[in-house]
Length: 414
Ligand SMILES: Nc1ncnc2c1ncn2[C@@H]1O[C@H](COP(=O)(O)OP(=O)(O)O)[C@@H](O)[C@H]1O
Ligand SMILES: Cc1cn([C@H]2C[C@H](O)[C@@H](COP(=O)(O)OP(=O)(O)O)O2)c(=O)[nH]c1=O
Image (cartoon, rainbow, N blue to C red; front, side, top):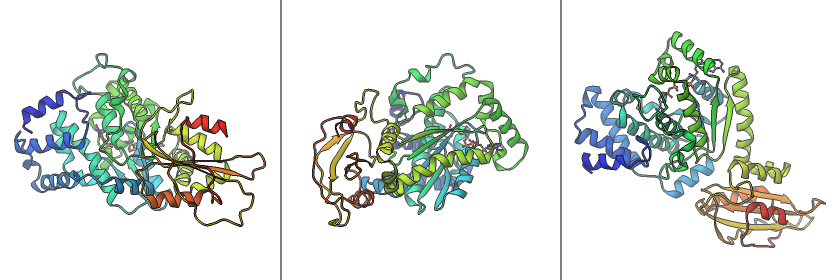
Protein backbone atom coordinates (compact mmCIF):
# COMPACT_ATOMS: atom_id res chain seq x y z
CA UNK A 1 0.00 0.00 0.00
CA UNK A 2 1.35 3.43 -0.85
CA UNK A 3 1.08 6.40 1.44
CA UNK A 4 -1.66 8.03 -0.68
CA UNK A 5 -3.73 4.84 -0.68
CA UNK A 6 -3.23 4.70 3.01
CA UNK A 7 -4.43 8.26 3.54
CA UNK A 8 -7.64 7.34 1.67
CA UNK A 9 -8.11 4.29 3.84
CA UNK A 10 -7.71 6.28 7.04
CA UNK A 11 -10.29 8.79 5.89
CA UNK A 12 -12.86 6.00 6.07
CA UNK A 13 -12.27 5.19 9.74
CA UNK A 14 -15.31 5.69 11.95
CA UNK A 15 -13.35 7.94 14.32
CA UNK A 16 -10.10 9.63 13.26
CA UNK A 17 -7.16 7.73 14.69
CA UNK A 18 -9.19 4.72 15.78
CA UNK A 19 -7.65 1.83 13.86
CA UNK A 20 -9.85 -1.15 13.06
CA UNK A 21 -7.12 -3.79 13.00
CA UNK A 22 -3.48 -4.56 13.63
CA UNK A 23 -2.54 -4.46 9.96
CA UNK A 24 -4.11 -1.06 9.38
CA UNK A 25 -1.84 0.47 12.03
CA UNK A 26 1.26 -1.63 11.31
CA UNK A 27 1.19 -0.73 7.64
CA UNK A 28 1.26 2.97 8.51
CA UNK A 29 4.16 2.53 10.91
CA UNK A 30 6.08 0.67 8.23
CA UNK A 31 5.25 3.35 5.69
CA UNK A 32 6.56 5.92 8.13
CA UNK A 33 9.91 4.26 7.81
CA UNK A 34 9.97 3.46 4.09
CA UNK A 35 7.83 5.97 2.19
CA UNK A 36 7.25 8.86 4.50
CA UNK A 37 10.95 8.94 5.33
CA UNK A 38 10.30 9.86 8.90
CA UNK A 39 13.67 10.23 10.53
CA UNK A 40 13.54 7.43 13.00
CA UNK A 41 17.22 6.78 13.30
CA UNK A 42 17.94 9.96 15.23
CA UNK A 43 16.04 8.30 18.04
CA UNK A 44 18.41 5.39 18.30
CA UNK A 45 18.99 2.78 15.67
CA UNK A 46 18.79 -0.17 18.02
CA UNK A 47 15.44 0.83 19.52
CA UNK A 48 14.00 1.43 16.04
CA UNK A 49 15.29 -1.90 14.73
CA UNK A 50 13.92 -3.73 17.77
CA UNK A 51 10.53 -2.09 17.35
CA UNK A 52 10.15 -3.11 13.70
CA UNK A 53 11.38 -6.61 14.49
CA UNK A 54 8.69 -6.80 17.16
CA UNK A 55 6.07 -5.62 14.65
CA UNK A 56 7.12 -8.47 12.35
CA UNK A 57 6.83 -11.02 15.16
CA UNK A 58 3.38 -9.80 16.15
CA UNK A 59 2.30 -9.94 12.49
CA UNK A 60 1.62 -13.61 12.92
CA UNK A 61 -1.71 -13.69 14.72
CA UNK A 62 -2.21 -16.46 17.29
CA UNK A 63 -4.36 -19.34 16.16
CA UNK A 64 -7.84 -19.75 17.54
CA UNK A 65 -6.68 -22.82 19.42
CA UNK A 66 -3.85 -20.88 21.10
CA UNK A 67 -6.19 -18.05 22.03
CA UNK A 68 -8.79 -20.34 23.51
CA UNK A 69 -6.20 -22.20 25.50
CA UNK A 70 -4.85 -18.98 27.00
CA UNK A 71 -8.33 -17.66 27.75
CA UNK A 72 -9.14 -20.87 29.58
CA UNK A 73 -5.82 -21.20 31.41
CA UNK A 74 -5.19 -17.60 32.38
CA UNK A 75 -7.26 -14.88 33.97
CA UNK A 76 -6.70 -11.42 32.52
CA UNK A 77 -7.53 -8.29 34.49
CA UNK A 78 -7.37 -4.88 32.84
CA UNK A 79 -7.23 -1.75 34.99
CA UNK A 80 -8.44 1.48 33.47
CA UNK A 81 -8.90 4.98 34.74
CA UNK A 82 -7.70 8.50 34.22
CA UNK A 83 -4.08 9.43 34.74
CA UNK A 84 -3.36 9.57 38.45
CA UNK A 85 -6.38 7.47 39.43
CA UNK A 86 -4.06 4.89 41.01
CA UNK A 87 -3.83 2.14 38.38
CA UNK A 88 -0.10 1.57 38.71
CA UNK A 89 -0.34 1.54 42.49
CA UNK A 90 -3.24 -0.90 42.41
CA UNK A 91 -1.46 -3.15 39.89
CA UNK A 92 1.46 -3.59 42.20
CA UNK A 93 -0.79 -4.22 45.21
CA UNK A 94 -2.74 -6.83 43.28
CA UNK A 95 0.32 -8.60 42.00
CA UNK A 96 1.55 -8.86 45.62
CA UNK A 97 -1.80 -10.26 46.71
CA UNK A 98 -2.46 -12.71 43.88
CA UNK A 99 -0.19 -15.74 43.56
CA UNK A 100 1.21 -16.59 40.11
CA UNK A 101 0.34 -13.16 38.82
CA UNK A 102 2.17 -10.89 36.47
CA UNK A 103 1.74 -7.14 36.33
CA UNK A 104 2.32 -5.53 32.93
CA UNK A 105 1.34 -2.34 31.12
CA UNK A 106 0.44 -0.93 27.73
CA UNK A 107 2.62 0.18 26.05
CA UNK A 108 4.84 -2.57 27.37
CA UNK A 109 8.23 -1.90 28.94
CA UNK A 110 9.80 -3.30 25.77
CA UNK A 111 8.52 -0.12 24.05
CA UNK A 112 9.79 2.30 26.66
CA UNK A 113 12.58 3.69 24.52
CA UNK A 114 10.61 3.98 21.31
CA UNK A 115 7.41 5.42 22.82
CA UNK A 116 8.68 9.03 23.15
CA UNK A 117 9.51 9.00 19.46
CA UNK A 118 5.94 8.27 18.43
CA UNK A 119 4.55 10.59 21.11
CA UNK A 120 6.68 13.35 19.63
CA UNK A 121 5.34 12.67 16.14
CA UNK A 122 1.84 12.81 17.55
CA UNK A 123 -1.30 12.59 15.42
CA UNK A 124 -2.15 9.48 13.48
CA UNK A 125 1.35 7.98 13.83
CA UNK A 126 1.14 8.12 17.62
CA UNK A 127 -2.30 6.53 17.46
CA UNK A 128 -0.97 3.79 15.22
CA UNK A 129 1.81 3.15 17.72
CA UNK A 130 -0.63 2.87 20.64
CA UNK A 131 -2.85 0.63 18.57
CA UNK A 132 -0.10 -1.90 17.78
CA UNK A 133 1.11 -1.76 21.37
CA UNK A 134 -2.08 -3.62 22.35
CA UNK A 135 -1.11 -6.52 20.10
CA UNK A 136 2.47 -6.48 21.36
CA UNK A 137 1.03 -6.85 24.84
CA UNK A 138 -1.12 -9.73 23.66
CA UNK A 139 2.04 -11.36 22.35
CA UNK A 140 3.65 -10.96 25.79
CA UNK A 141 0.66 -12.56 27.49
CA UNK A 142 0.79 -15.50 25.09
CA UNK A 143 4.44 -16.05 25.90
CA UNK A 144 4.34 -15.69 29.68
CA UNK A 145 3.89 -18.51 32.15
CA UNK A 146 1.88 -16.74 34.83
CA UNK A 147 -1.77 -17.53 35.27
CA UNK A 148 -3.19 -14.18 36.37
CA UNK A 149 -2.25 -11.18 34.25
CA UNK A 150 -2.87 -7.70 35.62
CA UNK A 151 -2.65 -5.02 32.97
CA UNK A 152 -2.21 -1.31 33.59
CA UNK A 153 -4.19 0.03 30.57
CA UNK A 154 -4.93 -1.95 27.42
CA UNK A 155 -7.16 -1.51 24.40
CA UNK A 156 -9.83 0.34 26.41
CA UNK A 157 -7.33 3.20 26.85
CA UNK A 158 -6.44 3.27 23.18
CA UNK A 159 -10.10 3.53 22.30
CA UNK A 160 -11.19 5.91 25.06
CA UNK A 161 -8.32 8.35 24.65
CA UNK A 162 -8.81 8.44 20.88
CA UNK A 163 -12.57 8.76 20.92
CA UNK A 164 -12.56 11.04 23.94
CA UNK A 165 -10.24 13.53 22.33
CA UNK A 166 -9.85 13.00 18.60
CA UNK A 167 -8.72 16.55 17.93
CA UNK A 168 -5.71 17.50 19.98
CA UNK A 169 -6.00 21.18 19.11
CA UNK A 170 -9.47 21.49 20.58
CA UNK A 171 -9.75 23.60 23.68
CA UNK A 172 -13.42 22.88 24.11
CA UNK A 173 -15.31 19.70 23.38
CA UNK A 174 -18.47 21.36 22.14
CA UNK A 175 -17.89 20.39 18.53
CA UNK A 176 -17.50 16.70 19.36
CA UNK A 177 -20.29 14.16 19.24
CA UNK A 178 -21.29 13.18 22.80
CA UNK A 179 -19.93 9.74 23.67
CA UNK A 180 -23.40 8.37 24.35
CA UNK A 181 -24.46 9.27 20.80
CA UNK A 182 -21.63 7.42 19.09
CA UNK A 183 -22.48 4.01 17.61
CA UNK A 184 -21.67 0.84 19.57
CA UNK A 185 -19.31 -0.24 16.82
CA UNK A 186 -16.82 2.44 17.89
CA UNK A 187 -16.39 0.82 21.30
CA UNK A 188 -16.04 -2.75 20.13
CA UNK A 189 -12.89 -4.65 21.05
CA UNK A 190 -11.08 -5.30 17.72
CA UNK A 191 -11.82 -8.73 16.30
CA UNK A 192 -8.19 -9.41 15.58
CA UNK A 193 -7.07 -8.55 19.12
CA UNK A 194 -7.92 -12.06 20.11
CA UNK A 195 -7.21 -12.01 23.84
CA UNK A 196 -9.45 -9.87 25.95
CA UNK A 197 -9.87 -9.21 29.65
CA UNK A 198 -11.90 -11.56 31.78
CA UNK A 199 -12.39 -8.56 34.03
CA UNK A 200 -12.13 -4.85 33.34
CA UNK A 201 -11.85 -2.66 36.43
CA UNK A 202 -12.51 1.03 35.95
CA UNK A 203 -11.11 3.35 38.60
CA UNK A 204 -13.58 6.08 39.51
CA UNK A 205 -12.06 9.11 41.18
CA UNK A 206 -13.12 12.59 42.15
CA UNK A 207 -11.41 15.08 39.75
CA UNK A 208 -10.00 17.14 42.61
CA UNK A 209 -8.52 14.09 44.37
CA UNK A 210 -7.01 12.98 41.08
CA UNK A 211 -5.50 16.39 40.46
CA UNK A 212 -3.94 16.47 43.93
CA UNK A 213 -2.45 13.03 43.44
CA UNK A 214 -0.99 13.93 40.06
CA UNK A 215 0.57 17.06 41.56
CA UNK A 216 1.91 15.15 44.53
CA UNK A 217 3.35 12.51 42.21
CA UNK A 218 5.02 15.21 40.11
CA UNK A 219 6.62 16.78 43.15
CA UNK A 220 7.98 13.58 44.64
CA UNK A 221 10.39 12.86 41.77
CA UNK A 222 11.15 9.47 40.24
CA UNK A 223 10.18 7.82 36.97
CA UNK A 224 6.43 8.02 37.35
CA UNK A 225 6.57 11.64 38.37
CA UNK A 226 6.52 13.25 34.93
CA UNK A 227 3.49 15.24 33.89
CA UNK A 228 2.27 13.84 30.63
CA UNK A 229 0.27 15.97 28.16
CA UNK A 230 -2.93 14.41 29.45
CA UNK A 231 -2.33 15.73 32.97
CA UNK A 232 -2.48 19.21 31.55
CA UNK A 233 -5.37 18.51 29.15
CA UNK A 234 -7.46 16.88 31.83
CA UNK A 235 -7.15 19.88 34.10
CA UNK A 236 -7.72 22.45 31.33
CA UNK A 237 -10.73 20.58 29.95
CA UNK A 238 -12.48 18.76 32.81
CA UNK A 239 -15.22 17.36 30.49
CA UNK A 240 -12.48 15.44 28.73
CA UNK A 241 -12.11 13.16 31.74
CA UNK A 242 -15.86 12.58 31.68
CA UNK A 243 -15.72 11.66 27.98
CA UNK A 244 -12.87 9.22 28.57
CA UNK A 245 -14.65 7.57 31.49
CA UNK A 246 -17.87 7.33 29.50
CA UNK A 247 -15.90 5.68 26.71
CA UNK A 248 -14.39 3.13 29.12
CA UNK A 249 -17.86 2.20 30.25
CA UNK A 250 -19.02 1.58 26.68
CA UNK A 251 -16.20 -0.76 25.69
CA UNK A 252 -17.51 -4.18 24.71
CA UNK A 253 -15.28 -7.23 24.67
CA UNK A 254 -14.23 -7.65 28.30
CA UNK A 255 -16.25 -10.44 29.85
CA UNK A 256 -17.07 -8.49 32.98
CA UNK A 257 -16.76 -4.82 33.91
CA UNK A 258 -16.74 -3.35 37.40
CA UNK A 259 -16.06 0.08 38.83
CA UNK A 260 -13.67 0.62 41.71
CA UNK A 261 -13.97 3.57 44.06
CA UNK A 262 -10.45 4.95 43.77
CA UNK A 263 -10.89 7.83 46.22
CA UNK A 264 -10.12 5.78 49.29
CA UNK A 265 -6.80 4.77 50.83
CA UNK A 266 -4.49 2.49 48.88
CA UNK A 267 -5.36 -0.45 51.17
CA UNK A 268 -9.10 0.16 50.83
CA UNK A 269 -8.91 0.43 47.06
CA UNK A 270 -6.89 -2.79 46.89
CA UNK A 271 -9.33 -4.59 49.16
CA UNK A 272 -12.37 -3.46 47.22
CA UNK A 273 -10.71 -4.57 43.95
CA UNK A 274 -9.86 -7.92 45.56
CA UNK A 275 -13.46 -8.36 46.66
CA UNK A 276 -14.40 -8.38 42.98
CA UNK A 277 -11.38 -10.34 41.79
CA UNK A 278 -11.45 -13.16 44.37
CA UNK A 279 -14.83 -14.60 43.37
CA UNK A 280 -14.07 -14.05 39.71
CA UNK A 281 -10.85 -16.04 40.04
CA UNK A 282 -12.67 -18.76 41.86
CA UNK A 283 -15.35 -18.97 39.20
CA UNK A 284 -12.69 -19.14 36.54
CA UNK A 285 -10.33 -21.65 38.10
CA UNK A 286 -12.66 -23.56 40.44
CA UNK A 287 -16.19 -23.29 39.12
CA UNK A 288 -17.41 -26.26 41.18
CA UNK A 289 -17.27 -24.27 44.42
CA UNK A 290 -19.84 -21.86 43.02
CA UNK A 291 -22.15 -24.54 41.82
CA UNK A 292 -22.08 -26.06 45.25
CA UNK A 293 -22.94 -22.85 47.06
CA UNK A 294 -25.54 -21.11 44.94
CA UNK A 295 -25.65 -22.40 41.43
CA UNK A 296 -28.67 -20.60 40.15
CA UNK A 297 -27.63 -17.35 41.77
CA UNK A 298 -24.26 -17.70 40.18
CA UNK A 299 -25.78 -18.25 36.78
CA UNK A 300 -28.01 -15.22 37.10
CA UNK A 301 -25.07 -13.14 38.13
CA UNK A 302 -22.95 -14.34 35.26
CA UNK A 303 -25.57 -13.84 32.64
CA UNK A 304 -26.06 -10.28 33.77
CA UNK A 305 -22.36 -9.72 33.82
CA UNK A 306 -22.07 -11.00 30.33
CA UNK A 307 -25.08 -9.00 29.37
CA UNK A 308 -26.53 -11.89 27.49
CA UNK A 309 -30.16 -10.92 27.72
CA UNK A 310 -32.07 -7.73 27.45
CA UNK A 311 -34.69 -6.72 30.03
CA UNK A 312 -37.30 -8.99 28.50
CA UNK A 313 -35.00 -11.99 28.58
CA UNK A 314 -34.17 -12.03 24.88
CA UNK A 315 -30.67 -12.89 23.85
CA UNK A 316 -28.80 -9.86 22.66
CA UNK A 317 -25.57 -11.24 21.31
CA UNK A 318 -24.78 -13.49 18.46
CA UNK A 319 -21.96 -15.92 17.94
CA UNK A 320 -21.68 -19.58 17.39
CA UNK A 321 -22.24 -21.65 20.50
CA UNK A 322 -22.77 -25.24 21.31
CA UNK A 323 -25.24 -26.29 23.87
CA UNK A 324 -25.32 -29.36 25.98
CA UNK A 325 -27.97 -30.13 28.52
CA UNK A 326 -27.56 -32.99 30.90
CA UNK A 327 -29.21 -33.87 34.11
CA UNK A 328 -28.77 -36.14 37.06
CA UNK A 329 -31.89 -37.48 38.73
CA UNK A 330 -30.55 -40.13 41.00
CA UNK A 331 -30.33 -39.33 44.69
CA UNK A 332 -27.39 -41.60 45.03
CA UNK A 333 -23.89 -40.42 44.32
CA UNK A 334 -22.34 -43.79 44.98
CA UNK A 335 -22.97 -45.31 41.60
CA UNK A 336 -21.43 -42.66 39.42
CA UNK A 337 -20.34 -44.13 36.18
CA UNK A 338 -17.25 -42.12 35.45
CA UNK A 339 -16.88 -38.98 33.41
CA UNK A 340 -19.93 -37.65 31.65
CA UNK A 341 -20.25 -38.09 27.97
CA UNK A 342 -20.17 -34.79 26.28
CA UNK A 343 -22.54 -34.40 23.46
CA UNK A 344 -23.21 -31.37 21.40
CA UNK A 345 -26.85 -30.84 20.74
CA UNK A 346 -26.83 -27.85 18.56
CA UNK A 347 -24.95 -24.84 17.44
CA UNK A 348 -26.30 -21.62 18.75
CA UNK A 349 -25.42 -18.08 18.35
CA UNK A 350 -25.11 -16.28 21.67
CA UNK A 351 -22.04 -14.29 22.58
CA UNK A 352 -18.33 -14.49 21.98
CA UNK A 353 -16.03 -17.24 23.03
CA UNK A 354 -17.05 -17.41 26.65
CA UNK A 355 -17.17 -20.66 28.50
CA UNK A 356 -19.69 -20.74 31.28
CA UNK A 357 -22.29 -22.90 32.88
CA UNK A 358 -25.67 -22.97 34.31
CA UNK A 359 -26.44 -25.59 36.85
CA UNK A 360 -29.25 -25.72 39.28
CA UNK A 361 -31.27 -27.82 41.63
CA UNK A 362 -34.28 -29.11 39.83
CA UNK A 363 -36.40 -30.30 42.71
CA UNK A 364 -37.36 -28.82 46.01
CA UNK A 365 -35.91 -31.78 47.87
CA UNK A 366 -32.48 -31.05 46.44
CA UNK A 367 -32.07 -34.55 45.16
CA UNK A 368 -31.63 -33.86 41.50
CA UNK A 369 -29.53 -31.60 39.44
CA UNK A 370 -29.60 -30.21 36.01
CA UNK A 371 -26.44 -29.05 34.48
CA UNK A 372 -26.33 -27.00 31.37
CA UNK A 373 -23.04 -26.46 29.74
CA UNK A 374 -22.75 -23.94 27.01
CA UNK A 375 -19.46 -23.98 25.44
CA UNK A 376 -18.04 -22.20 22.58
CA UNK A 377 -16.92 -24.46 19.79
CA UNK A 378 -13.78 -22.41 19.98
CA UNK A 379 -12.59 -23.86 23.26
CA UNK A 380 -10.14 -26.75 23.22
CA UNK A 381 -12.00 -29.91 24.09
CA UNK A 382 -9.79 -30.90 26.99
CA UNK A 383 -10.57 -27.71 28.90
CA UNK A 384 -14.30 -28.09 28.30
CA UNK A 385 -14.14 -31.61 29.53
CA UNK A 386 -12.12 -30.78 32.59
CA UNK A 387 -14.50 -28.01 33.51
CA UNK A 388 -17.52 -30.24 33.13
CA UNK A 389 -16.01 -32.95 35.26
CA UNK A 390 -15.27 -30.53 38.04
CA UNK A 391 -18.75 -29.07 38.21
CA UNK A 392 -21.31 -31.66 39.08
CA UNK A 393 -20.59 -35.31 38.40
CA UNK A 394 -23.36 -36.60 36.23
CA UNK A 395 -24.54 -40.09 36.78
CA UNK A 396 -26.83 -40.25 33.89
CA UNK A 397 -27.25 -38.02 30.96
CA UNK A 398 -30.93 -37.95 30.32
CA UNK A 399 -31.79 -35.23 28.00
CA UNK A 400 -30.26 -33.49 25.15
CA UNK A 401 -32.37 -30.59 24.26
CA UNK A 402 -32.27 -28.32 21.35
CA UNK A 403 -31.89 -24.83 22.46
CA UNK A 404 -34.88 -23.11 21.03
CA UNK A 405 -35.61 -20.53 23.65
CA UNK A 406 -33.83 -17.86 25.54
CA UNK A 407 -31.72 -18.61 28.55
CA UNK A 408 -34.26 -17.14 30.93
CA UNK A 409 -37.18 -18.97 29.48
CA UNK A 410 -35.28 -22.17 29.91
CA UNK A 411 -34.64 -21.38 33.51
CA UNK A 412 -38.31 -20.71 34.06
CA UNK A 413 -39.43 -23.89 32.35
CA UNK A 414 -37.57 -26.14 34.71
N1 LIG B 1 -5.54 5.25 47.02
C1 LIG B 1 -4.58 6.18 47.01
N2 LIG B 1 -4.52 7.08 47.97
C2 LIG B 1 -3.57 8.05 47.96
N3 LIG B 1 -2.62 8.16 47.01
C3 LIG B 1 -2.63 7.27 46.01
C4 LIG B 1 -3.61 6.23 45.95
N4 LIG B 1 -3.37 5.49 44.84
C5 LIG B 1 -2.31 6.06 44.24
N5 LIG B 1 -1.84 7.11 44.93
C6 LIG B 1 -0.74 8.01 44.58
O1 LIG B 1 -1.27 8.84 43.52
C7 LIG B 1 -0.33 8.99 42.48
C8 LIG B 1 -0.93 8.44 41.19
O2 LIG B 1 -1.06 7.04 41.30
P1 LIG B 1 -0.62 6.09 40.14
O3 LIG B 1 -0.77 4.69 40.64
O4 LIG B 1 0.71 6.48 39.57
O5 LIG B 1 -1.80 6.42 39.07
P2 LIG B 1 -1.95 6.03 37.53
O6 LIG B 1 -1.12 4.81 37.26
O7 LIG B 1 -3.41 5.78 37.37
O8 LIG B 1 -1.50 7.21 36.73
C9 LIG B 1 0.94 8.28 42.92
O9 LIG B 1 1.82 9.23 43.48
C10 LIG B 1 0.46 7.30 43.97
O10 LIG B 1 1.45 7.05 44.95
C1 LIG C 1 -2.20 2.91 26.45
C2 LIG C 1 -2.53 4.29 25.93
C3 LIG C 1 -2.24 5.41 26.64
N1 LIG C 1 -2.55 6.63 26.15
C4 LIG C 1 -2.23 7.82 26.92
C5 LIG C 1 -3.09 7.92 28.14
C6 LIG C 1 -2.22 8.46 29.19
O1 LIG C 1 -2.62 9.78 29.48
C7 LIG C 1 -0.85 8.51 28.60
C8 LIG C 1 0.17 7.97 29.53
O2 LIG C 1 -0.20 6.65 29.91
P1 LIG C 1 0.61 5.85 31.01
O3 LIG C 1 1.98 5.56 30.55
O4 LIG C 1 -0.22 4.69 31.38
O5 LIG C 1 0.69 6.89 32.19
P2 LIG C 1 -0.04 6.90 33.59
O6 LIG C 1 0.55 5.76 34.36
O7 LIG C 1 0.29 8.24 34.16
O8 LIG C 1 -1.50 6.74 33.37
O9 LIG C 1 -0.90 7.78 27.40
C9 LIG C 1 -3.17 6.78 24.94
O10 LIG C 1 -3.47 7.90 24.51
N2 LIG C 1 -3.46 5.68 24.20
C10 LIG C 1 -3.16 4.43 24.65
O11 LIG C 1 -3.41 3.44 23.94
